Length: 357
Image 1 (spheres, rainbow, N blue to C red):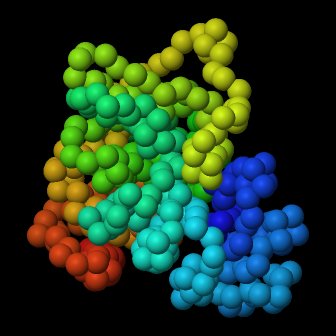
Image 2 (tube, one colour):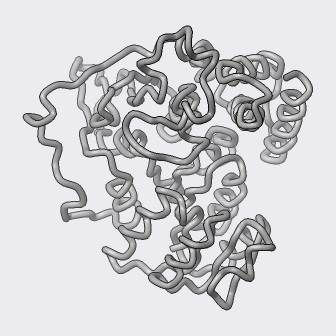
């Protein structure tokens, strides 16, 4: 397989699963964590390695090391692997997804931004989702009429905060996720609930038109639910680990235990909460966005630009959602007609956000 984002949590888990099933790792690509990359090279012996920055190439313990986006696209094209695991974070993951599909490869997709920004131009028959929520929906689907698909949210770092405190929340505060440790951006997205907005959009592209919603389940044991038209509801429960969806992406048969079962007697009870617009202002545009999913490119670009400004302390935490909503309203007619339009709109939105901060 080709693994993009090997040093992140999803990449690390993908390598654990690959080793378990004896899957050859042809390519490793990562950002700046060269120390961990060198450890992975030693254990998995890839043929090719790609890093983000040219100045890091000499630090990598491998004879075939390249750098930059063009190198990533080239190694995907040159690879013999039929599977690309895309665990890159952000818009930079889009071109590799498009290249992999162009090369008739299957994409185990954890890069939310690919479908959020460019869903209308992606052949989803080539996509195997490895976000736990979409995996859960896929796992539950049967040939029965569906009324609604529901994914769950943890609620993020501020789910229990007094709402009045949110305006003064710091970057460090956003990283205190109640359930697990993730990368910086996704943890911020969890706190704003933008990640769940993204996941609803992804579900819309993966499973087609229909009704989609999200609720908070505080223990992150239920990942998805489906309301069927007959009045019944099914839920996918599993201990929180990316290894299960990754395992199915690597081996569709999957006839052995990947995780221990959830012990409901030990769990005792589950708590569900509504996603409140006062705490999570981004939820104001949920319904409109799901009706106009092509506008995902706008919220993705605005979100990435806003997060950069938040990290640089140019705006406050609650300004992230305000910035996204402002851009969404300003670019109401930004409907891409071609894949190239995605990249043009992305640039325009980032420029708009920078000027109007």
